[in-house]
Length: 592
Image 1 (spheres, rainbow, N blue to C red):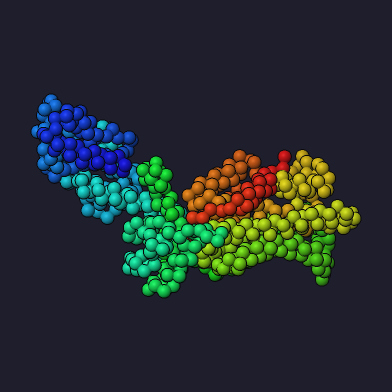
Image 2 (cartoon, rainbow, N blue to C red; image 1 turned 90 degrees about the horizontal axis):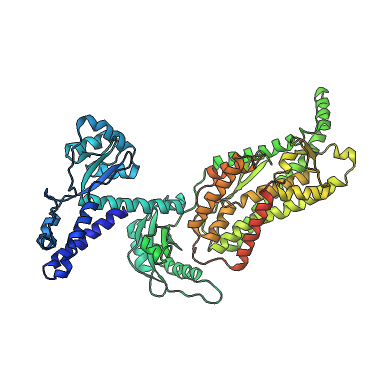
C-alpha cells in the first residue's frame, strides 16, 4: 500500500517537472534518468511464490515514450502521461490451460487483497476465486508470470485508489476493534448525533476540534486540542470530561451518546511516528450504553459449577488421608452410619476458600462505590488445583480515570492476598502445635502443588521445618490445617489474577500503567511465558498453563474505556504496581 502511494506521488511530481522543463532547461537535465527509474518501478514486480502483481492501467493503450536523449524529455506531454499504461515490458495473456494455476495462486492471497481484486471486476468479495479469475481473463487483464502459480493483473488508477482507501479503512477497523471491546460497538452512533455533539458541546473553552468527526467502528473520533488546564491538583483530562458532561447534559444528544478522552486508537502513519505525533489524545463518541452483555443463565451455571468444584476439591483433599478413608469406609458399611463428623472436618476448608474470594470481591465493591461506577455480579470460575480459579467481575459503567481503574483492579487481589496470608500463617501455626491424633485427621495437599509457589512453599518450610517439601517423590502429600490449604491456594489464585491478560485485574492494571497499545504487548508476552512454562515442564502442576487457557478463552476481551485515559498514574501507584509484580513472580515461580 505504501509502495503504491509513493509511486503515485512520484508520478504527480514528475508530471509537474515535465511541464516546467520547456521553460527551465536545468530541470529537464535529470528527467531522463528519473523517467527511466519510474518506468522500471511500474513494471511487473518479481513475484514471490503464489503472488499476484497489481499494475496501474491508464485510459489509453500507448506505452510511455522513452526519450533517447535529454532534449527529448521536453517532448513528453502531460496528455501522454495520462494515457500511459503501466507495462513497458512484454505481457503474455493468461492461457486457458493455466487458469487453474491462477485460481490456486489467487486462493493463497490474503483475504483483503482477494476482496480488493474482486471489486475491480464488479464482485463483492473474493470468496469465489474461479469467478474472479474468469472475469479478469474476459477483460484481458490477467497475464502469465515467470513461474508456476504466478500471475499479474492490471487495474485502473481509480481502482487502485479505491483499494488503498479500503485497505486503510480495514487497517483502522482492525486497530480500533483490537483496542476497544465489542460492547463499544453494540449500538453504533449515527452521524447526525455525532455532528450534534460536535456543534453543541465542543468549543474554545473545552475542546477545540481540528476537523469533523471521523467514523470508526461503533462511534466517532474527534481530533483537536484540550483547552482545559489542570488546577487545584486535578488533572486536565478529568476536568475536560467534567466540562464536557455539563454541556452534554443540556444538549440535544443527552442520553444518546457518551464521550471519552483517550489516546488515538487508529494506526499511526510513518510521518506521525517520526514527528512523535502517534497516540495523540482524541475524543471518542460512543452510544450511552457500552456495558458488556452477559447471559444471566450462563453466569449462574458457571458459578454453580464453581461452588461444586470447591466441594470436589475439599473432599479430594481428604483422599490422601488413609485414616479418614478407612473411617468413611467403615461408616458406609454400617447401616445408618453417621458421617456428620466428616462434614465438620471439610466445612472449614470450603468456607475459607469462599471467604478469600469474598474478600477479593469486597475490595472491588469498595472502590467502585467510592468512585461512582457500576460493576456486575461476579462469576465464580471453577478450578482444578484449588477449587476456584477466581471470579470474573465485569465493569458495567466507565471508571472516571485510569487511576480509578488501577485502584479498582488492585483492591480485589490486595484484599484477597491479605486474608490469604492471615489464613496461611494461622493454619500453619495450628498445624505445628496440633497433637498427633488431631493431625492424622487433617486434609492433605500433594508436595507437587505446594512446590508450585516459591513464596507459599517457603512460608510452609519456614514454619513447619526446612526440607519438608524436598521429598524425592512429588506425589507425597503433606497434612495441613484447612486454613493453611485455603491460604496457600488464595495466594496463588490472587497472584494469577494479577497477570497482565485481557480484562483480568492484572490486565486492567497493565492498561492503566502502560496504555492500551503496550498493554496488548504485555499480554502477548505473559501468555507466551505461561505457555512455555507449561509445555517445557517448568510448571509441573499445570497451574500456569490451565490459567493461560482460561484467560485466553474467557477474559481476552479488552476493558471498556475510562472517561479519561490520558492522565498518567502518579509515582505512588507506579511503585505499588512494581511491588505487586515482584509479589506475582515470587508467588508463581516454583520452589527449587
